[in-house]
Length: 574
Image (cartoon, rainbow, N blue to C red; front, side, top):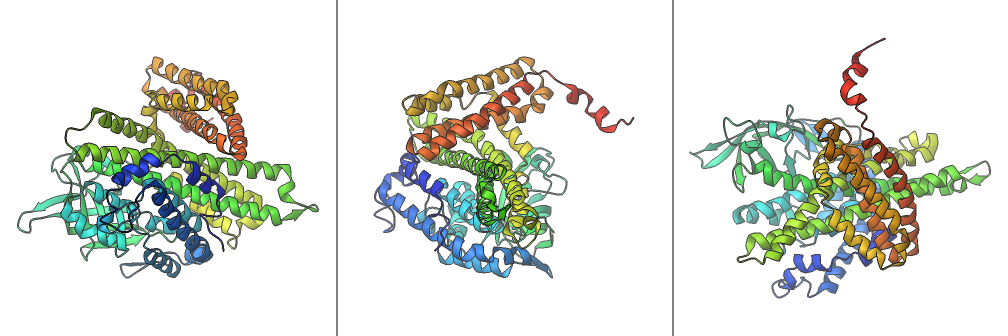
């Protein structure tokens, strides 16, 4: 039987070699729940075995039951009828499978019926579901809504909603975007007013491009402070959908057809404040979006893996000029690079997930404890800074390579890949959204560039280089250090110019260098465990060196032609 988890040797490699013992101990609170819950692990080994069993079950469901019906689900898509959204038949069946397997509360605490798994394990789960059917992930992956409620809401709200999320009784949505606001969430205008008579908040206005906007329970960003125009006037609310929330329409999209994207109208909808007023955007939504961005990185890897698998199988079967096309240099060159990009995105995203787990755990220790050890506060700040740069890096890199891999997978299929009968055509369409929603690639660059300029990852680079120096991969260290020096040189050049437009224009070059260096170091670190990883790390470094030379030359060129003359280039005619 097929199993997307067990059959993926790269995921198995990281499950064997990722250093997440500290994460497990933090998430399990040193295994203090073993006496309260009979299914709670007693030690690290039991926790890992639990993860393995759950992911094995999910991997089989995805490969054997969800993936075979993905094309039908895509063909039917989510439907809109008389104001109601109806999931495709295959989507409904898939959601029931996941619900019955008790897989809808991955990271929620056990006291609310959740599995209490780390974000890292949830990231792997998202990848598996996305490989099977990318649109389904946009329903399954919105467990982040429940996680945000768990992190920031009061106990009354948690008790009301979290057990229902864990059981799969309800689905979630995050309701942020508005017709006029787009990515600029500070411009959100949906009004939240306090109804003193009913002792509740009321929401009025509209939202657009809301993924799974027909969900039972949602978090919504709304303007609670009248007279304000910026993010400090926004708060976050939770509402349970009723007749006052009207789905006006669902979008007719290029891909992810099974995921309904809704336009919503709120008509004095009853809602409850989550956390504190005025903190909606600056704290809660940023945390929510960072979780969503990490989820999209995992979704992108799942789509890329599915596209690569289709291309590899086709190349192994297809004969041209009396030989398999997989033996033709132009084809196997494409396949090798596709596999390398997927493994690069995976190590970046998994390592980011580990950092996010540590950040969340240490922040919880700081917030819930008294007389906190200064070292714990220091670690909380350290992992928060790392998370702030690695999360957009992961989303940026994984979503870009997903599009590249899907593009090349279709190319390997030739004309047949352009036809609807082949899965690769669907993967090609589904991949395109990953570098658009939850913040475009350009917005991920904006989110990451501050950390790049501040050299946030330098201590991590030094740590990894020290580890590599004690392994046989030390022969690559001079080349890795040279890449680092090129990055520092480019950063220093931009800082000395002190020109905001110049920095913005070349930000993507700097962010690309940062991503390549982090990935190269992580791949070289893991190379000690397998010859295959050493080969991949060497190939990635060779490609990265060429990219570094290219990006460094551009950043330090001083060329301002497009910055200064873009209007002339765009609008002047001969």
